[in-house]
Image (cartoon, rainbow, N blue to C red; front, side, top):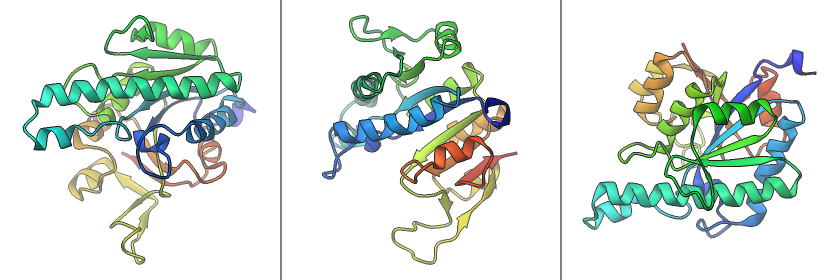
Length: 239
């Protein structure tokens, strides 16, 4: 079955909100299990899966910055929160019998391996899911940029940004019932139209290295699996 796949190694970018419960914050174990189930579906196809997760369910740096907090401090707090999310996701996956490793760009040996590119690749080659926490390890960079950077480093064939909508629209589909969904965008379209696919640094990094970005609804049944076979799911951003 693997020979029919269009993508055999992916980096999945999750927002922290993907783990939040109905109240919109915190970590909901049920949501972690739902994500793990979708990852297991594609792991069963023998696809290599790396994950970068955000921290918006636990901490939003801009709240602190708006109150006068130092930007670097706010960003480091966000990096630590991504590791908490990564551990929650790891636990859900391992309870589903997926071998998982958490690596962090901010070293914390008691709970996660340090991020080492060659070690991450080796884990993938052994069939392990690798969850990459701690962002890039540097302030002033988003987890979108971390996802683009890590995708390049591990030689992922596509960066999949998982959201709660089925692609990229010309306006917010939650507010505008007439919003139009794009099936394909060029990198420059995404940047110039300010469509909030990912931040401009992340998109530019993908553009410079010809890494396609696919934005899809993770919660749509089998959407992730279908995307790996090249089905027209979500919005593709590429050359």
